[in-house]
Image (cartoon, rainbow, N blue to C red; front, side, top):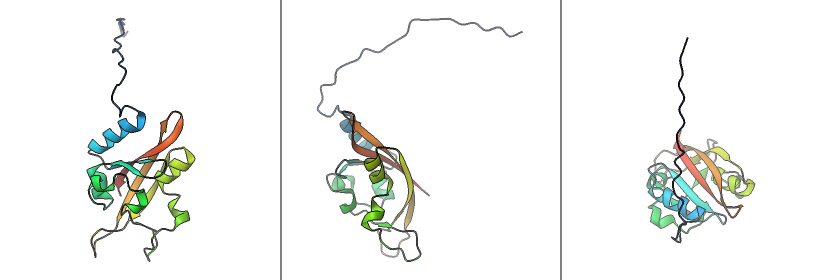
Length: 152
């Protein structure tokens, strides 16, 4: 017969501190995290402006340097999305509203989908990425979205 011993000890709860830094709101914390992340990720605000993007995210999405994108609208920052047809047409306005970062923003729910990114170099091959987006809240309302990307 098996013998099991159980012991109880005091619960260790770290002391909570009140943040005093200006970037200690939810968006500020995510922005700092995304900026330093090794993973390809992107944070946009409710107006679709880029708040932060990782260097790996810029590379995967065929964009420039992260500091050149911050503050620009997501779709005006050089991100060129194509449909999955053989013609490689650029996505139109109604189709763009269904990409995961914007869908999570409008729905307030988790969104996932594949994106076809136009190659940065002429003659280069397009990239297909899996995007998973989650809304980021501030004061109980959707203030932006956080998206992680993975090459397919």
